[in-house]
Length: 357
Image (cartoon, rainbow, N blue to C red; front, side, top):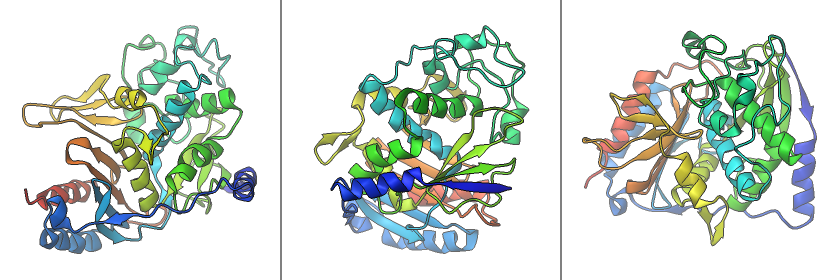
């Protein structure tokens, strides 16, 4: 396993700073839990649970103010599948400025993959289909989990746009399309379009390339890295390493429908379109999938919808518009850890059990 640091992201940071484009870190507001309808005593019991379970950080914001902050909220870890929400923001910006047309197909974009190469049917998949994880392309991909492989359909089983399958090929290729159509790296774009305007604390756009088959080994100490598995696909997975506090800022941007301190960074229409369900993924729990976001749908037992993304089933970025709430949970999965999916669901229950109204 080896990685080669890339200097481009660092040079962009230096250039932006030298030209006066850099921005001071965001000044977080703080509020007492009681002022936002939560119980301090209940949240104190949550702290004890997080410590026992092996969390790294938990941050809860209500109406833009932090009411609960626990752990190493300034420490960067790999965010795993939450990376898909990050690229959603970049697509919203670049679709709006005309750099990307989501009706374009893989054929029109001249995209293919290593043998066995894409079929004629697969080349008909549109960018819009990839955003919804409905491409119908079932080619091997980098950073695919056993869970993804378990339910992977055979090639050409479903026409593009007709079937949902949570598919890293779609997500990885979306990264390649973004870079092809803009001429910039994902990490440059995220720094310029998101991190700087939000005043992120810990993301500077540094990036590396990792060659190998194991996501968890020798992860570079950068803000992002491309993970190649060249025997499977020519397209790498693009990983982000973010702190809990920077992720909370990103979640607040989505809670604000893309508006930040008087600027519309992401079109509100894009965020609304991205966070409505195009596929029902768990009818029993009322869960759907939008465009690179999971959606908790309104049901007879749930008065409002919300959206979120998880990583490894234990990291979380959750946005709850009706409660004006952003929740970020982190575990240091870059080293040995013991936090379980069951403890993850208990953490969520404890957060909402602390609501006092």
